[in-house]
Figure 1 (tube, helix red, strand yellow):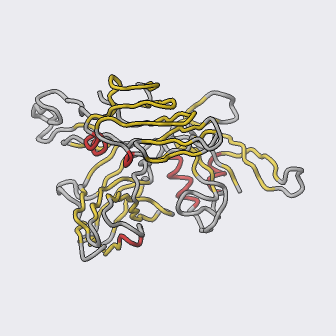
Figure 2 (cartoon, rainbow, N blue to C red; figure 1 turned 180 degrees about the vertical axis):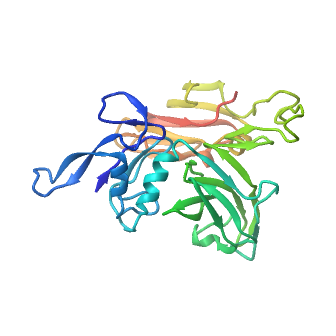
Figure 3 (cartoon, rainbow, N blue to C red; figure 1 turned 120 degrees about the vertical axis):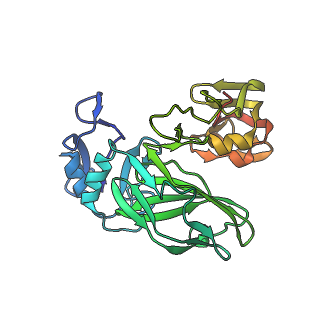
Amino acid sequence: MVIVMAGKKTFHSAQGDKLHQLRTDDIIVLAQTDSSALEGYRTVSSSLADAAKGVTNQIKVEGGAGIIVTDPTEGIIGDGRAATPIEVDSEYFNKNWVVNQYVNVTQVGNQTLQILPMVKGDGYNITVGSDISVYLGGLNLTFPTQTINIKDHVSSPDSQTLYMYFILVDSALRILITRTARAERYDSTYIGTIQMGVGVINTINTKPFMRVGNYRLSETIQGSAIPVTGNSPWTAEYPSWGGQGTLTPVRAGIDPSKYTGNTTFNLETETVRVVQDGQFFIQDLALALSNIGIYQQVFVSGGVDGAMGYLNGINIWKGKGSSSNVYDRSSLLREGWNVVHMEWGELQIRGPFLK
């Protein structure tokens, strides 16, 4: 097993505590298997480029098992084990993992059209009516005409909102459909949602886009986007997101001015903390979720054995100790007042605040 640690634009190397621009000749320390060593491995120094070329086996497609990477948005990825060994394109890993931290531009579909050629078919099927051009992770790719069965991705999709992504797997373009939203990266991009009925697809919502870093260029209001205008470059044009020459913020999210009990707010991280008992208020929950982002549980604790924790009457914790595991709690929240009851513990929720 090889452990590789790299950031998006900065890298912690053998040069001490200083963070600096990532280069392929940076020196990193690797843990290398050695049966003759007391602990079963030894540490060696290597350049980032050589380390990347060496990671050619035992990397799982989903989750990065077989490799441990520190990602700027998702934290530590991978567990170092390989349940499904595959061969990795080391040249792609070396060139694109490192280089595309600097050049991160994504384009999906024909920018002159309003939707991607993805329509609902019979039952759980999505029909891709024509090829979709995709530039992702520094590669020019094509997602071909085909039929996609949603149940190949989600076993129980009925009455759910599903999220679609294009991802890179060994330099190849794949589609990913999930029940939960996930962070975008240079090698994965959100393309739209599917609203499911029972046994049928109600709607598919997609549109072509261009992304700079993780921010889309958009003429209409949208989360994680940069406002742009239409017309010609020699004409005066104002963004239409919030009116003539102004951008009106979305009035939705947790309202820090409304609370009860032992409830506090961190405005910088947009986190609400409730110790034992308290309430917090959310204005226009649906608008916050659709335009700004989700609400995640980022910390929970209990002070005694058997201690229970509840969010709006739903049990979310039992026992003594604490957990920093992150869970999407959007479905448990309500428009208006949200009630937290923790028996000798606390709950922290991070998500959109009212601006």
